[in-house]
Length: 183
Image (tube, rainbow, N blue to C red; front, side, top):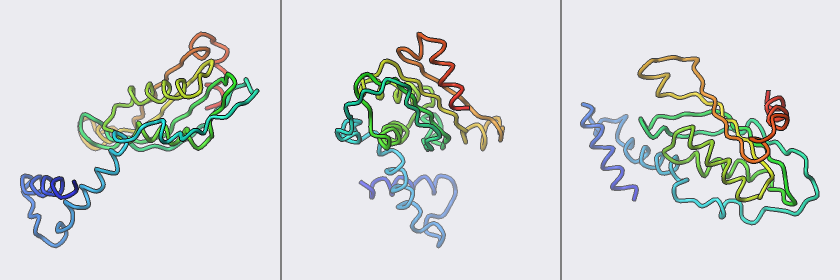
């Protein structure tokens, strides 16, 4: 599949007025095609496969928080990167998820053409579905190159989105505990 995609990027370079045959661009179409396949591989992945059964019985019913998980994604509107950190917390109900799986679940959704608002919701719903938790909270803080490199060109702009499910939505105390822990 890399070859047809490479041909398309070669055509894009030509349409931009570049010479795809010049030394610096000779392998660029192939490299861009491989990069785009990597950056969008999440659309071919299933959460169940990356979790791989790493859900374990536990008597813990207190908040579990994994914070500052780095991610990189591509905006579906301009196909430019957005990147930042994700904080995920949940209140277990008899089951806990292996800690590395939080980053893997995030990457399944981040490695798609995406908007931050949907990414936040998808991660929260996936953690809820996997763990059957009493509640899930997800906060994503990101910078968008579509705002930084083009358009309004605001270099220090950042976007924060949150999704609260179950107890995180219903209990202001639980939500406040989560928010204080990620600050």
